[in-house]
Image (cartoon, rainbow, N blue to C red; front, side, top):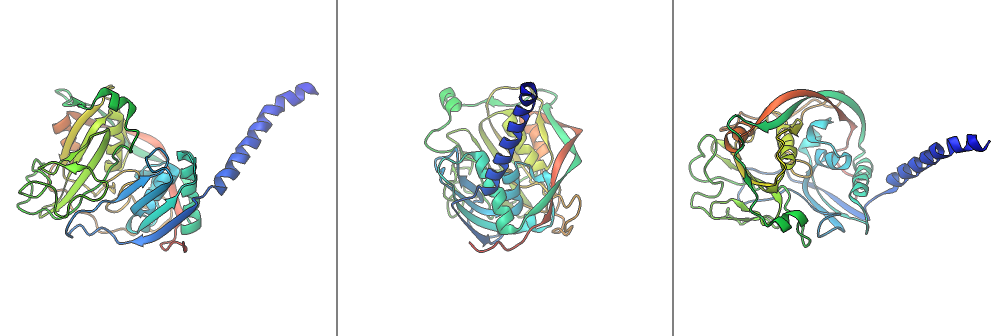
Length: 355
């Protein structure tokens, strides 16, 4: 009898532990969460604005998360730790935006906050979903012919190793506004600031990095910032990285290209870089990954859901990100296939329940 008990004791304990964990996840919630409808970005308007999230565990403000202009897809990506191309469902996942201020319980971990977002989506937006497996194009990033064109970071090695304990590293942000003067030449090359140089009209949004006289973000700690401006020939963008690994760059690229990008360069250092390109929204990729902004139509439903989408975006007027990556950084992408999980959203309400 003792032997029989010994055989089943550990498995039974694991089942109990798993049940307790699931119950705990279901009860996790923000102390207070204000969710309000937000106006969509007006890219032809004046000035500069930022869209994205700040605060939460691991930052200088762990007790509050402030998210401006979040789409339901942004929230799903954060809550379920997936990429944009792994979320499929009705068009409102991309088109509707919300301003959210959430109070995080003291001592909450990043994983617990993800559970809080999952519960918020179910309770406030009535989100219901299921999972399927789908074959995706996967790009492997490797050195192009002629070798890479990357520079080791200029940040102090100690700062790179330890990060900044006083404030979080800069995340992805977007600066959008009118681009005066003649349109940029194909492939970029012209500063994203006004023709006379200097910061954009209206100044940078709160929390945005400082810009030099050419409008290039000046990062003083590890991070990656993306900026975009609308001009007569369409949008032009600049990606600025400081002390970034190739894995960091790959994660950013897969959000832009709307499919997975794997680092196969073999490079282990941290690098500073600038990439100038013309954003291409035809594939459903967002301008910012993860908690940032998604611009343009999503990838559409895989199974079920509303297939209606916005009109097809125009072709980019200039070098695409893939072409700019090879020409400016000496990195090429080689396509392969892989199976990945996809969240199919069966139900989601446009109007959140009352705060």
